[in-house]
Length: 491
Image 1 (cartoon, rainbow, N blue to C red):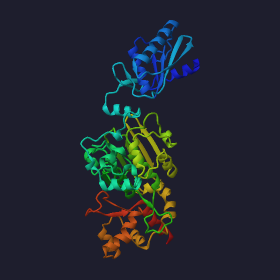
Image 2: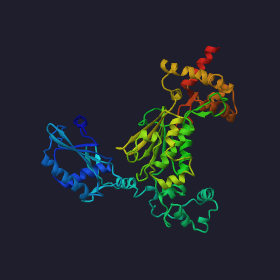
Image 3: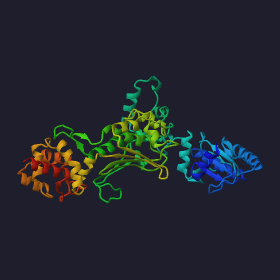
Image 4: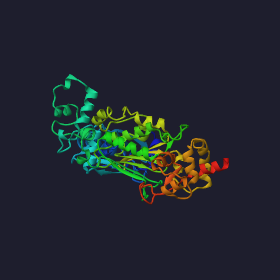
């Protein structure tokens, strides 16, 4: 390292990767710093630098003493030992000892008192919470959440029909498993210990998974606007069951709360989802399989007027970054769960899920939040679609959507829906609409007029969170108003 490189690094100040010390006299204190770096991705310790970043410098005798102290601390006061690399840089003020501590391969690293240290900003902290300890053991490959036994469970808690269908589909008449009891089968497949189910067995085939792990579900909410703190909502559901049931329920929730686009199809067809289904499938599966099951929290699914957010408990493991996973790099946090889920859910593995989702729909943000211990995927909806969520009708909004209304809607509206749009003034009840249209047969009115207009985003309910309310009324959306205006200009 050159003097200019040293001064450049020091000028940036202390952070999670760079620590300054004027001197060191205690092996235990130095060991705690080394363990914290090894547990937290590695970093550099600078001896001979003051806290404010100014160079203090060391003489030859101090350097010899510190090297001996460092060797003792790294080999005798850290368990397992760490192997730092040192370099002495000569400056005008004296020598600076630069100690590079690599990211540890045998986490967690402990000091002589059995304490585990990690970096927190430019300082370090003592790890005490059980969940964080479990995650550290998980990263080191010593324990995985998906194979932890579920106390009190047994083979009786397996959905026999679902397990048998999976087993026969995957293994058929495999002689290796012939004549084994159900308990032995589950143990051989890594889904139990012969007595109790583990978490993978419970979440894949449990008859009532949330009885044992109530937090392991999907909490889904659809909001009319763009803010999380909005007290109004359009739809909400707590989606329980096995991972397959949660996937199906969450995907159905998304589909019923997003728009469908005709793209040249007949108006009475449902159309394609505004966001490609492939992208949403990949992101949902990744959230269910790769979440941190040591964290007792639910996957959160939120549909806003401008975006869909999927929030998974647990930030990205080890040194993985959003950029890494967007390129296909992966670390299997739940290997047993992943192995079996790949034959149950639409999951292909090998880190291909996020790249495949980005290829299908590039407007996706990946947000890792280590401090909040969560990972979020934000899927942005098409602008023209979310503008149909009834913001004020301004000139700017009109300019943005008029062309798309002309291209995508005009000419595809059925005669029945056209009559409905032209008859709707202000806010009207279903009965009022039927009366003005002269329709007495309710099923025909709903199937030919009302539902197609709602599905196309041309009209909306005034009380969307209570669709069957006796006070329910209907009104034109921005897109519906523009369609009516466009028709008026053509006549």
